[in-house]
Length: 224
Image (cartoon, rainbow, N blue to C red; front, side):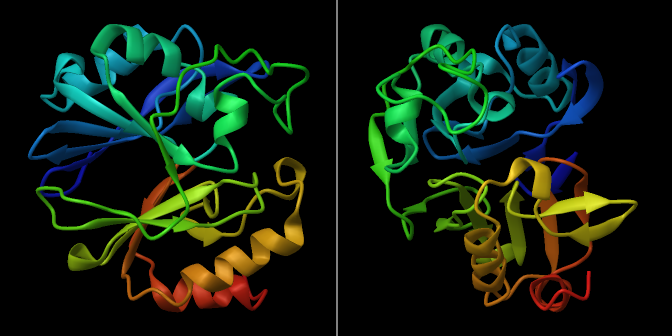
């Protein structure tokens, strides 16, 4: 699904934790090639390739991966993508040690099934990527994991929330309580996102909705 010119929400059908579900990495066209926001599960390289092909894109054009966080459904395929594309890897400094295999993940056991990969650039929040849709800015939104990072395209009024928010039954809702170790910090992150001027939100779980700042404010206040 093309979310705006040069920005694509990929819908990948996967089996995870004993159930079938859809996950939604994002591919962004940049002057240097494709930037992927998340990559999917271990063993999912072919699934990712197929998702890109469905949008008229190619895995071979990937120049960088920016991970929203350490969880397996977002980062599990990272090592395989790097091997296939020699992509530059960006991730928040708080989650980078997990991605590199230096620390255990906060969820999923000793290694969570994650093959380590080098994080080339450690984000802190506020970094901006040049893209065909205008600047893409990293927003540190911890809680779901310490380094969870959302991204915003201010020129397009589009928030790429990853797991800081979810879509359920077509409505924007908060982070999943059963998958969010620090709910208090996650709530603070939702309040931070409510300060952005956006009118559309795309989530890794649930997809896109025509809901922006006002809806996020409702989630932050506990109304949703």
